[in-house]
Image (cartoon, rainbow, N blue to C red):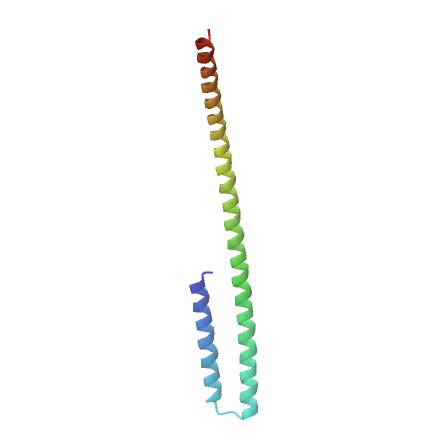
Length: 109
């Protein structure tokens, strides 16, 4: 979940809590009943928010693990390709060195 998505969820939950609180405060109930309703709404919202945070954390962990695995796979592929190229370069240098040795041997005769 992106940061923007998290902000949207938080804004929606905040709006829901404020709306529920205002609705309860204007309801024609006794103070005791109103406080119980507010407490229940806060508990429900807290539970819902905790579940959403847990879900977001799980999704973030899952995404991070997938990205790490992708990075590691691409790194291994790059290292493997570089290894082949290094072998080609070494072989080419060895051929050139051998040619230079032959030319040097001819010049010293």
